[in-house]
Length: 288
Image (cartoon, rainbow, N blue to C red; front, side, top):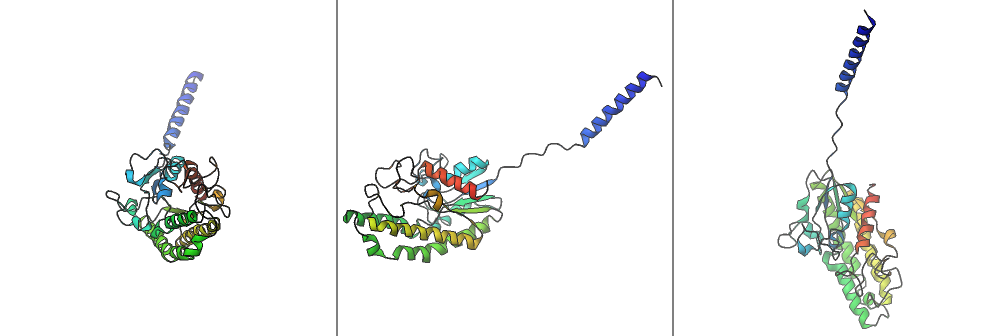
């Protein structure tokens, strides 16, 4: 066979081989769909007091586009359904909290991949009642003594241990039943007051009641952590991360706004830095 025809035959065979090999290479795998992320919870989840408000949420829920669920969803590229709502108690996971604000658990399905929530602080009005009552009594004593501890003793912590704990535990079980494949993370509450020295001008709580309220919050976070451990949920611990960032910390450092001279329209709640800190904690705990 002449040389030129041989070369043409070899080239044709090579082209055919490349074509066949190309047919055997599978098409590039399609990108997986985004995770289905459902955010439940109260005002600490909703980011109440932080503007702008989420346009697709009920105004009464005071839900912010800068809350930690939105920040987490943006970071992991998830499809977010945020039903968190200001003032929510554990019972509001099961019932309409307001007109046109349905039970939060209704947002869960068998396709839900991730669930986060902050809940329990409003149950029985225990924590908000403690803040208000201790603040009122502190004002009467001009910041001296421990009038709240002297008046209420173990009343608040007893409620947390006896009522809030079983409610949160059952809620976590019910979340897992409705969303069986979901990774469930319940977030602890960032510190509201420091361990010892308070700030009476901004938080009208008597000096002796600062450790009292701190212990109450530690009890609340403790029962939430216990409920998570007993139900297989993940607890996002905010204690170390929020140390020194409480309502008595200076502007620019604090994560929680004080009762007086704060920057949020909703006092004793996280500001934008606090919500960002909670988002970082969720992502780190979940390994994202």
